[in-house]
Length: 405
Image 1: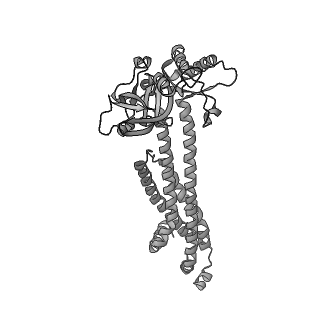
Image 2: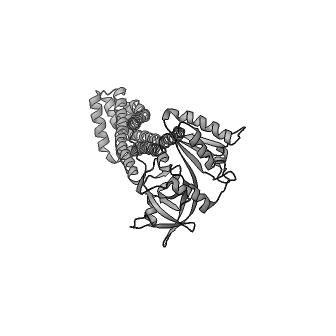
Image 3: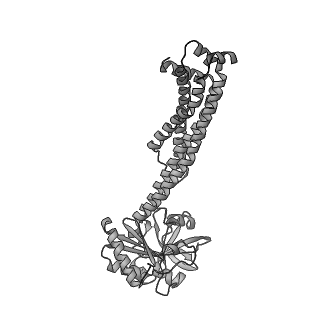
């Protein structure tokens, strides 16, 4: 019997038992769909996080206070960076294009009878350029506003929608910790960066924040949460990092371990790429377990099929079918079940990934490699788990098979 005849007979057998064939394929369908959807979700998460980091600004370094150990602590954060450090970096590091120091706090913001708890960001006029932010309305505060400690504020889009319903916020007043501030601008929507959602924040001049809202919390000057530094060229990033390190070590009179950390976009991308890549592999491995379970299901059903079709096998062998013919037929049935299940699962997985993209900020990637591997693995699983029942069927003695029928 040739392959074509074996294929036709396998198809007739499977279509004659549609319910059983469908239930047998279910494990493979679920396995393939899970693998493709999970890999797509992992790639979407990686793309989303990378986009967030790239949105921090072009060629940006972030200088944070303290050591890696102190940064991981959720309390007693170090106060080793001050405004004078940021001004020294801007003045003495030649490859630096701009410096935007920030101090972040939280407080109650009110407008009329509306109020909300918000993140308050004290920064300098260089913030939009260094951090790559645009204004949707109005203007950003200036050097003059900084020097005069003007009580002016720039708010994010979500904050504007929350405090000013169907109103133009520019020119109106808000109260921050019971201090009146005039809104002079609204940031263009951008999303969260470094765990902070600037769309839902209020930005004020750093000196105004120190004098009016929080006071001087460091004995060495105006405390900073971190310093964002933009470098004039990507090729100068490592040189700028080296120069800033030496400058701050000298200013802080560091002898042993640095009391600050410098991270670049590249560093952050590598860290997040490693984490999200490992997460993708983990998700795919967990989903892949269902493929293995689906293969066991195929083997179980095929073994049952051998028992049910004992008379058919005995009759075919009695009229001349060889062990190889029987083996090939059962192997073809197992591969068809797994391959069709793989194709159906692929369609469901792709659809599930696209559905995830509609309801989450992630945009899952449909990995061609994941599809090929999932379908190939499911076909291989069918072949592997079909061997035992196929060999059992091929070894049946035709006389015994006919008598036991």
